[in-house]
Length: 112
Ligand code: 5GP
Image (cartoon, rainbow, N blue to C red; front, side, top):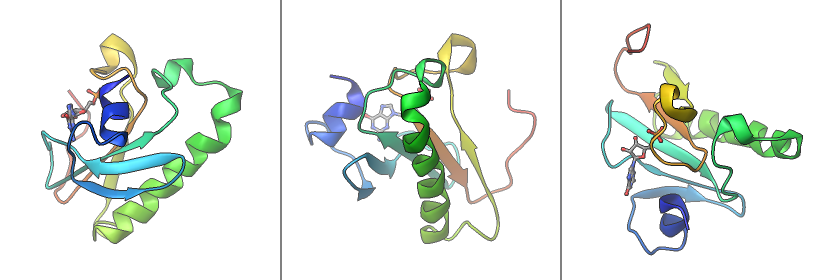
């Protein structure tokens, strides 16, 4: 089981914002911005580099869920960033695909 599957199974606690059949949304344990939320598909796709055509609809739904979550958390107007870290150079630390939703302050560019 991945760490995120353990959160879905309630084996590890998390501040859950929302959940449906396909995904779960919760606050990052080590926030890098005033709002830092993770959107995780329940299907344990290891990383974006390994997603397939079969995951097309799921990936689209996750982006729209990020949009809805940003609105619900009050950062839709001020702006936000979606990040997907894939692989070693991408900064991935948990091998279970997830989107980071960051906002609540101006975010620098380019990322480090
Ligand atoms: P990655 O580096 O793989 O893109 O992102 C993994 C994220 O998971 C990190 O931002 C990290 O802070 C977060 N994280 C790691 N362990 C836990 C945990 O046990 N609970 C929660 N809520 N977030 C975690």
